Length: 77
Image (cartoon, rainbow, N blue to C red; front, side, top):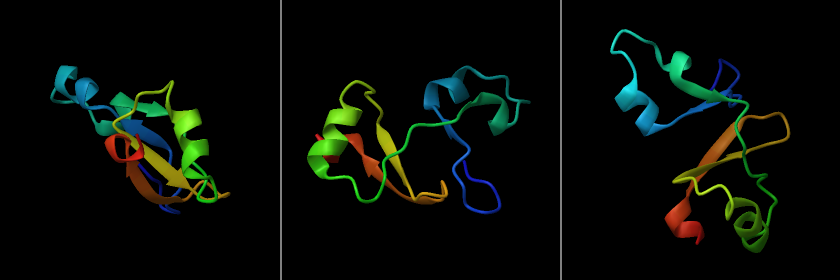
């Protein structure tokens, strides 16, 4: 999830949505302060950082924390 300035503020995990009460809002179930890749990171550097995390999708953010895009884990590895 991103705020009004497109800064990444959290990540929503599918299992959390599936187990949540249907009345809850997405921010109630998101993981705050998410890990992200820098856009100038090499593929090998991203693989080294991502290997221990096992995320299906990795966010890519600039220095201000703005979400630039997503890398699918299966494409990275």
